[in-house]
Length: 328
Image 1 (spheres, rainbow, N blue to C red):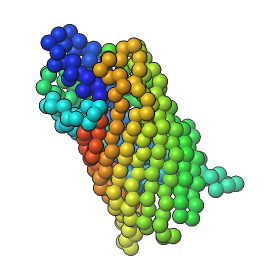
Image 2 (cartoon, rainbow, N blue to C red; image 1 turned 180 degrees about the horizontal axis):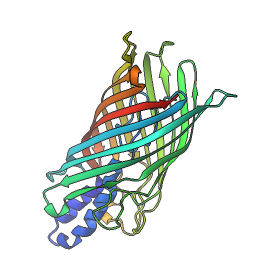
Image 3 (cartoon, helix red, strand yellow; image 1 turned 60 degrees about the vertical axis):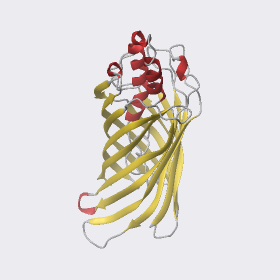
Image 4 (tube, rainbow, N blue to C red; image 1 turned 180 degrees about the vertical axis):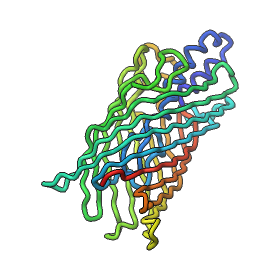
């Protein structure tokens, strides 16, 4: 991430040691972007983590109450600056998050519209090691709560359309100007729009995407405001429908994502080296999911890698998710 790049550049300076504590704090503020609450397959429980959505990113689920447990593991060993050049710092970054949440979906009886509400809360851990031991991080705690008070959707013959509003509340472990934070210490408002298109009436072949725009508020206890971002996540693949009694459906395909920071970070406490640096990331990877009829559940496995980045590490993410239809 750009904050990590800044930390390394400053630590290289002979007089940098006195600035280490402040720089580590800034590193943590931006590093926690990896640990936002992550979503369920077709049940959106937040999608800050790139690669956490896939083949059904823009789909509208059927009516019901869904319970979700998603494990996300992220790792990176390369860091790139704002120009896309690699910075040799001996990076070893490992992070994981485990959000648990729900989504409730209702079909309005007088129309074809669906209404969805969702919420999730994660726990997370980050371990960061670089060539400078004083800039290393090892922290664990609760993350920020995700709430989606409203999402509307429509299920047409071969197309689903969804649009929603959500927010991330600063409820996670947060210590301004210190290295022990998991939460962001800020409110983020998220507006999303997307859909899925099926190429055949049997709904076997599909392509899907969900776009989102995030408006970040000023952080608590420090004058830093993260620049707003635009991202998409989605995928394309095929659903197989076995005739057995256990596997109701099996989906296979390719997932992808992109993120662009569209506004500069700002604030009096933002280091000069970070001004004007904007995040960019593109990634892709395989996905397989299976619906298990006896327990009314879906298991998803997804692995994605960044193919190009700027102002951030180049990493990979593994998603393992269980979605349970608790009530139909």
